[in-house]
Image (cartoon, rainbow, N blue to C red; front, side):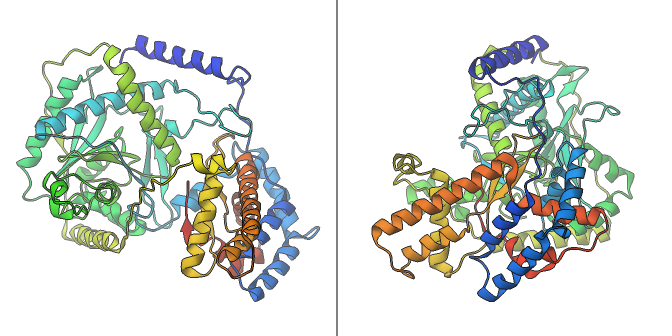
Length: 571
């Protein structure tokens, strides 16, 4: 994509944006995330604990909360320290939250952390069609990355509560520059956009568990779609010819994080492995060329559909989440890399991404922007000339000793156990959509959240801590806080619906609306920067920063219970 086309696109986007939202000045920096009021946070904390603790537990916890929040107590001291800390930070919660939510978690990335996304399926009649589609996708991503590199994306806007307010865009700009490095006790998130090193000009193509460097820029010229197809064809042939003695090194990235960190250290002892790791970690993104899935693994019952090998929702989602086992595509990955695009021989396409750099909404919108951009502008752009002499793609080499070989075997066995332990069901509910609750003057989000509370209670006869992400991108470096749906108002309605308390239909509706209003109020307060969860985390971490005794409020079992999310609903 030429510089002229980039400038034209950015100029057009900026003009449309200014016409739609003339009252918001994009030259002004976003506000900083506020530190919520201590007493209000403690009230919210007590409220969400009431439905999930026993009477004895809540009585003890109330006393702990009261003591923490009393005048001149620990809470006020930590609040003052947090306010001072926040004055000198772009976003006081960002690094603590990132470590708490992702980098300190020791569980394997696939299934536990990395989301999968399914794209519209394609129909490939042969391998060449798969490779041509892959070439077009690479070219479209690189076109779109050009817009990202000049920070020319249209600014996302708030859709309610100060409608049109600009949102932080930093998550987008991490998608093609970030990499998660495993560590003992804590991972680290690195960036390859250092001024000390040249920008990466290659992607990694994974095919039959082998890794290939595909240079997408050669002699300052970006490869055309035809050149990309040529190189992908070469890679496919090289992978086919070398299937016998391939060590599935990529499965190490699916191991428990401490174990992968140790194994990575062993790999780094060999210069050959260091070079291969560096090529992967500094790549723009990864393209996974998957093998077709056997018909027997599909979940459809129709004979006609089975014969045409139409993939069902569960099969597609599982492939993007974990690759369907090490005998298929689970090792045809590198789970630490932020963006992994997946294209299967049978037309299944999608994405698996490492979650720590960005929220799902940024990835979803980026993909939507990308597909729309390819459709609208792709045909208008000047196509680059083919490079006559293309160097052969380079297969990454590994030196694997018996110790690392054992690590690979253990990681593979563990991955297969994780897959076996996963129950995934997908329901396409078609009776009504969001328009129905809106027609009843109800928030669709609150409607769904309360339906989930009722469903869980009917099955398990109890309330549990519930996680629903709430974007705080109105603020600099904003990520998310948590909306708690397990409120006393929700419990009161659920108990009326299940007959544990007597109530007429009219009273049930009134209780429902009361619970919905409570849910909406929590959501509004949270997206405006007054959430409870990040604030409590900040108070806990500021105590650690200053080497202070940990307050009982964070040591008591109720705090652990409140942060064990048996029901995680996101959006």
